[in-house]
Image (cartoon, rainbow, N blue to C red):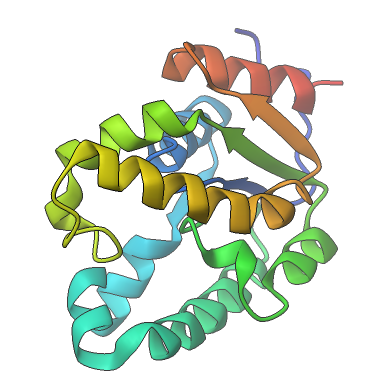
Length: 182
């Protein structure tokens, strides 16, 4: 896909529920547009020198959310336009979604079905502190359905919704580039 028509004047923000593909799509998009890529969770882990799971265990979710907010603000204040992939809960805490929308008009919600999210999360549940104790696919689907229902209001505040159902990473990335080219 040609990117010559794409003029980026603010960060591109990728948000959605955990396992929606935000990091993969964000990296791919940044690569295609020759932009820096910031994965908020990676920055948090690097800053704290521990995994997200360890932060949750040692400091609790509230401290994690405070740290996440601080790093989000730092990332949004960066002068260089970047592709920023958020954690699944980032838009839902403090005034994060207002900060995001105030700093970018290129905010994309990667909308993925609860079935697909549940299948992906079941395979990697041991790396996800919020669901690591859930033992079955059915339990994970119940959790995901409840959680997405609680968070969808924030996700829908994005400027654009990309339906990721049955689409490959490149198709989703190209859909975002097409929107940015308009």
